[in-house]
Length: 266
Image 1: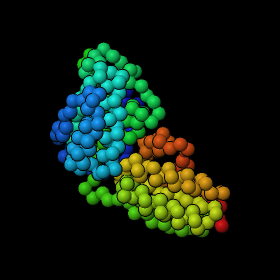
Image 2: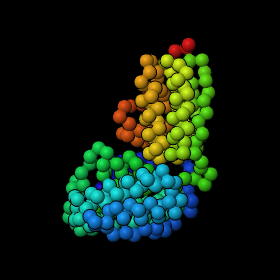
Image 3: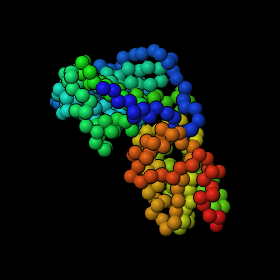
Image 4: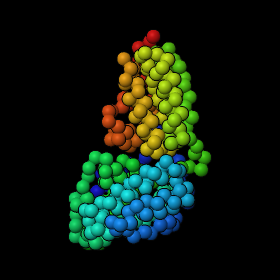
């Protein structure tokens, strides 16, 4: 059985993503056997290896959590043992979690629960597949490495008559998150009915901390009397990811100009 319906490989913005590095070259970074007693050491080993391979700290946390959840599934819903491998394929780190002892089992043995296991792997990775067959079960999660010129986004506020546009250019990551939160606070504190557009069209990379900053911004604006937040410039896959990870849906439009009519002039 093969499940690749959750292939979310896409840039954050609707435009082109970061370039590949030496596409097609495969380098084995980690090959680590695990069982119930070695899940915690596996996390430490993963973190060290993927950071050394160039994955930023915030995104490495996402990778470690994903592989740990998959390994936990292999331990508690499979044979009890497994193997984690990480390969660098050009600009991607490919994580493979195998449960060879589950030969003949179906992937349905690995449950899909909100916030755990396969669900988490689908929405934290850039691409996720899972297969089962005579050789057991193999889950594969891809994590894109940032482009060589990638840097954390710096928020820029552009105040219009009816609303404010917050422009982000760069990585939506753990370094950008507190800056975004501070900018949102400035907008919300300046008016009882904040209208805000966050334009992501120039965002090149992301991690879960950056996504959390967007969710918190949405909640902060929603707590006001008549505030509204709109996201623009999202690729379809990233919009799907936000819908899955956020407790409330976002309002989205293609561009800031197409969002302007949603706000009443002051």
